[in-house]
Image (cartoon, rainbow, N blue to C red; front, top):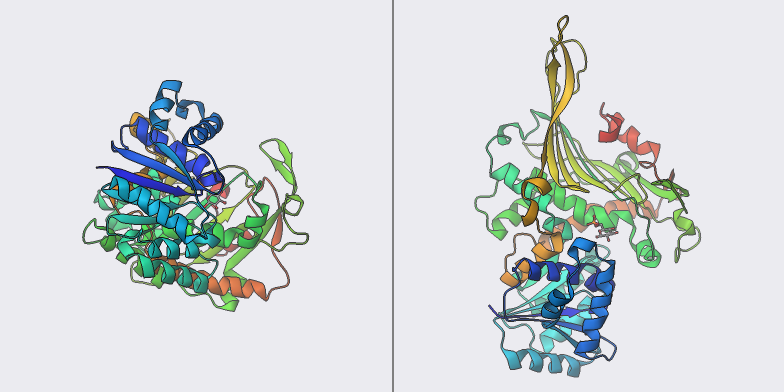
Length: 481
Ligand code: BG6
């Protein structure tokens, strides 16, 4: 299959930090179909050779095992091309169309790795130039809008040029191997299904913690905040994977229909519920990994006195027969003690204890980051005579070890799926809009709340109110158990 992959924003952060390393890994793994061209598009004038040197220099920042040798890079760089474009100029799109048509590749993927405010204009121009033929697809990176109205407006413009099947919305968490394993765990094994319901599960916790701060993205982040940046998309997507009903087939729409049903079943927020069930925080100076770090308000490009949240913890429920009454806790934050993304399924305690000692309940931990694995926590008896006591033990499955050489990174997987037209791991517009519909009352309530976010020290697990939120139901976050 021949392909043209066009990267708008070809000199931007996303392209050189994530997309090029992922494309190189795909190339190294022999997954990039032969006969492909990768065309980077950006504003400044440069030749193909200059662009290849520019990307080569940026590979120095990639972890060593993923860096190309000179020989590998020379072969990979043979696919790289560069084109100057002014994204407001129709002529430039016509020029791009001519470049693409001259080759006549089987598949053309147009990846918008630009600033999101350009999506409407770029999509409209692509459509006007005829860069929307059936063998062409457009890929959109988050954030798609900043609320329901703006997301709908983007979708309206995208839909005017492309069908739903041609418009691929990326949530890079869906490309993470652990997420595919979650599907495999739930729908490739019969073991957990009878337990995957309110009768056996006490609560579910999704934590997406980062130890980094906002870095150089202070201006973007301050317009966004943790709720829009991580909860509306990544955390909710994970929640749908956990809570969805088994789809009738593995087809993209069968899966996405089930995910949408979960989003529609989420308990809607009222103003009182936001005050009771949502905690927002903002980091102050503190210590992370032994290093003193500044508070959010001292970060570069953050406006003085900003009330932007860098932490959110919330409690919700999925209102259907399977999950009625089971709390789902979502939590994300910057400047937490560690980079740690995991889903913890806490099972109920035994109905009647006959052993003395700990009464810890079983839990299943699905680890996304830093390592990718599965832990099943059980209680076991430690022999030694006398009274039998129970102690926690865990069955620990490390996927990185189990499948060592075959692990594929999130962007690598999603880019290959985009080229192949596999839609399972892309977010449909109705899912995305429903997620906005659900978070909007929170944004609305915060606008009218003068108290602002609660402070927490960098290097802590967030404001104490986040612990209280879970303690209220008689539970605790994983690190407090
Ligand atoms: C992005 C957010 O979507 O996800 C960033 O905009 C965040 O703020 C990043 O740092 C986290 O991704 P990962 O894959 O490093 O957990």
